[in-house]
Image 1 (cartoon, rainbow, N blue to C red):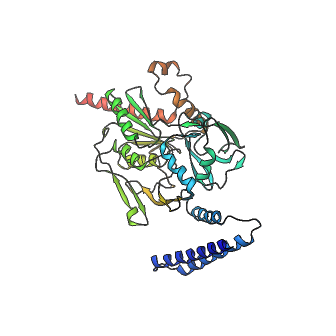
Image 2: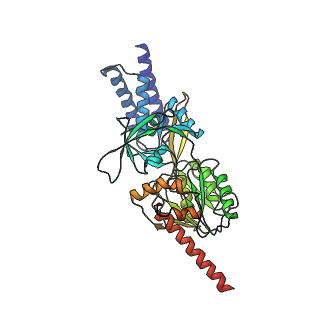
Image 3: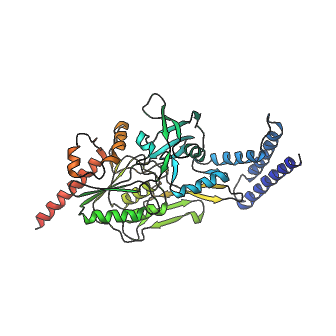
Length: 420
């Protein structure tokens, strides 16, 4: 009883302290009296639950539950992470884990697939961007936080997890049983298409992706590319520094890539290209779709605003906000949205996404077939492409980009002949 009494006194003291701090920090803002009243109300609710709920309650868990609820009142990307979840978040940066191979987000309290990663279990089974996970192992996933969902989906390599998917265009919920694997995503795929058109697909914005891309692009330039298709479809993003580095491959040093804007002055930052570009003059088409998010949207937005290339495909996902990780004394942490990203021309990416210059939409069935074959056909020789042409499902977005670059090459060649 002494413990409970002191804990309640501590909570009440903290509530009053927080209300006082709030009043002192924002004394010019109206409504601080209402905030102080609500802080007292919170303490009363805690005491009533602790003394009257039918079962004994863990009062520490009760407080943590209240903090998680507080974060849920913000956006789906802001979270309170207990020490265990905080450690799991840090483990994400290692880039290798037992999982399904999907990038997910919490959208309207439903865990939603942003994109499957190439050559992973989820990718091979046809999990698609926009799929909504409504159950995990026969337990409802509605209302789960992103971290809770990740914890349930990950597990030891070789074990199974069953997910139930609500998919647009399907009358019934779909079930997939997926065997977890160690996920180590490949970053960059390259190919040389007909007419000396280079193809470069970027899977994720990792720390080393800009250097890998420069190396791969240098190889394509040595082969004599006369146009380039940058494919960032189904790319969920990653590191901001990587997105800036990738953009810098195509735009001139000193040009604005993206800027952030928040409530605090130190959250308002501008990011510029810092290195000489590698392909500032190569005709460029960038492929995007609804699975392109975050870093992909930064790259597409900058290239579009600077007129560096054509953006082709579908409107992007619309997830471009800054999450700051704030460590707390007990090992827990806050993942808090502190700013939003804007393209160089001032367009907010968050929720809006990037609109393509040329819209080419795909049916879900064509998208699924392309995902299934995309990994397999990269790197085939021209002879193998011709031999297997009847088996290959046409990718309308890639074909349109290829045709645009071939046409540009044709007109450039004609212009040179006319000059001579």
